[in-house]
Image 1 (cartoon, helix red, strand yellow):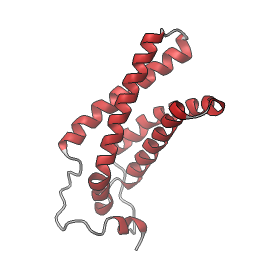
Image 2: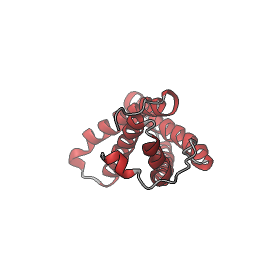
Image 3: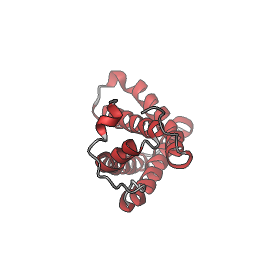
Length: 153
């Protein structure tokens, strides 16, 4: 029995194919867009415009942080239901695990940016925005394209 099967063995007999409750779906998309938009706004102004007043910079980062916290809450709520059902049904495994990895790296790098030391700040900033931009592709693949089930599992 592989590790994916072990995670999903105690699922109820009848499982709805609609794995994510409406409240999670309706809250996750706008939160992702707000987080993405505020992150891209910060990146563009910091990288290419080089002028963002302290007040605007502060509010962009506040919006980014709050939307990231909402995403973290939705992610935590998705773990016991949405992810377990996906594993049990053997659906969207590759894109789901990729999205999980991307979200975890973004959460850790975000915390390192806030609480970490100054020595590593520059490479953490770069890693955070590169992975943040990559999250667009990963989320698109998970939501729209849907990955194929794993074979032989």
